[in-house]
Length: 252
Length: 242
Image (cartoon, each protein chain N blue to C red):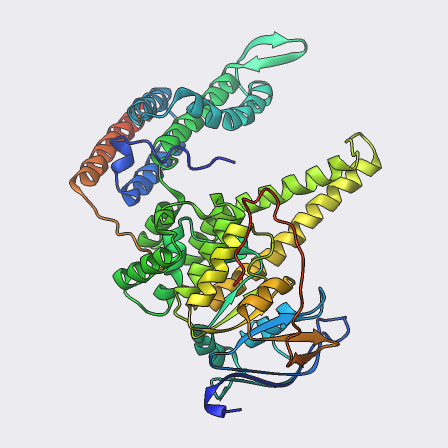
């Protein structure tokens, strides 16, 4: 399992303070999510593309991360053009494809990809622990940050446990099919994973208690807000204002 | 027994997991300063349970726990117990949860109220002591089994405990790592209780061996001298006899 492989890239963007990155992605996503004008959305997509190009991430890594989002979007393209009310453009069989439906699906595709690209270039390039630290500094709920952090730490252990279980059933000649035996076996595996992770949770908690854990995480690294961070935030605000003005003038 | 030197004093401890028969049945255990005790017993005989009771992670059904002369009952009593007694868990994956080795080792000292610089300093020193100096920026989940165990030991030692409870510290490790752990335990002037199924190890680094049987501790005063034969495959993995 690979999650943090983008964090070693030495680019200008990687040097931005994680707090600045979180704030920038947050507001960028909001503006993109509420915008409707196609020119605004296309500009946002182009801006994200521009930023990701400077982040020095390999194209393969970018595509690998875009695939899951776009698989979801493909399904939208199956339904939205047919189900949205509006002016029919052409017919496929007895179903009419509407102009509004196509625009709607197109808009969602651009929005998701623009946000995703921004997330990849800014957030995926930050080590998880630094991100958690930044979230705490931004006064996000402690429990949420801890949850996020432990999910990351133990997802590898869960993954290993899952692979171990899968190997164990393979060793004993299990071949999945469409039958009750297969369903039952998979149910057992899921159940086992849940129980095992619950057990592990208790053991980890115990280990933390033994080392004096009182509900606080302390970090040994300092975050420092530098000039480059201020510049990046000002730039992002400028971009968002331009996008906002474009959106506002497009509607009226 | 000199009561001033008594570190752990358990009397009449009973414990059972819900719906199961008693694991510990009116168990007594004493550990004094400078004691190095080995604890053996079959799987499921309650060795780990006993450790967890000492640390206050499990509450006994009955009995009295005295640590450093003070009765420990509530969760708050055990907070100071955990400062003085370090528990090394069976599974290192439970013990290491921070992303990097240095952060994990510094976690304990930080919780004890050390400043960040002090904590990092202690962590570095502990890692150096275990020859793990170059490990500090490694990711904990990417370490090998043996490395994880050594780092776990470092996390416990960084708390600067006076006593260690070691739950099968060498199980599943190669001779090299095993020797390293053995050497470390010999160098440290700490008292400890060591659970292991490895009799050779117990004879080498403990002074007395207790057996846990039917929920009680049986003290074997006489260590039985014995001769054993074993193979050293490829010569490379040979170990030194002390």
